[in-house]
Structure formats: structure tokens, C-alpha cells
Length: 161
Image 1 (cartoon, one colour):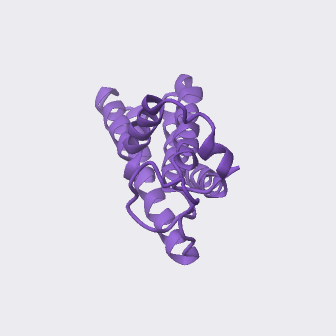
Image 2 (cartoon, rainbow, N blue to C red):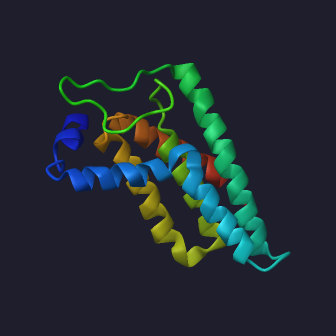
């Protein structure tokens, strides 16, 4: 599966570059913090929606920290494919689970509570962040699947009741 994602859809360098730029927006959950801050700023002060955005920001950070703890425990190295170097830089040599997937699915789970009509868009963006990582050659598909499960679980456990 990794080889398939790493070799298909790479005919146009502009597409690769676009996917890399998109993926970089998810580094450390940055785009999810920005979305949460925007949602919080636009929501009515004191409202349940504003509290949900704020909690989503916090849970995104918690998911990033828990992801790193799992990475340290598992110690799985990143994939290395002969003649197919990674297409984007990474912040650590550890692969399992994908922090992009973990933070994205945790944020999508939380922000869906703040803005229910956006749920499909939130999960769609989370899935795109996840799939971008093996496409760019920096994660195994199982890394992003585990990250999606971990992020969703964290989001469901910590979301507002």
C-alpha cells in the first residue's frame, strides 16, 4: 500500500508540491489550532459553541502530546523506500502513529461539536491530511490508520457533554 501511494499520482510536480504544502499546514496541528482560534473568536462570548471551540483547541494539543508519548514507546522508524526519498521534511525519525492523523481526527471530532454542519468537511480534511503522509513517503498506511483511531478516541473521550 505504501509503495502504491508513493508511486501513483506523482506525474505532476505541481500536485506533489501542493500536497506537500497542504500537509505542512498540519504540522504540530497548526491549521487546527488556527481553525479553533477563528471559531472561538467568531462565536458569541459565553456561548456553548465558544466553549466547544476552546475545548477543541485544548484537545488538539492533548492529542499531539499523547501521540508523541506513543511514538516514544513504540520507536517505529519512518519508511525508507529505495530510490523514493521522502518528499517533505519531518520533525522526528519516529513514525507510529502519525501526529498529522492524530491531531486532525481529534480536532475534527471536537470541532464537529462546535459546528455540526461542517462535520463532513472537517473529517474530509482530516482524511486528506492523513493520506498525504504516506503519499509523501513519511508514514506507513498503518501509521495514519492508528493515528486516526487514536485521535478519534481522544476526541470522543474528551469532548463536551
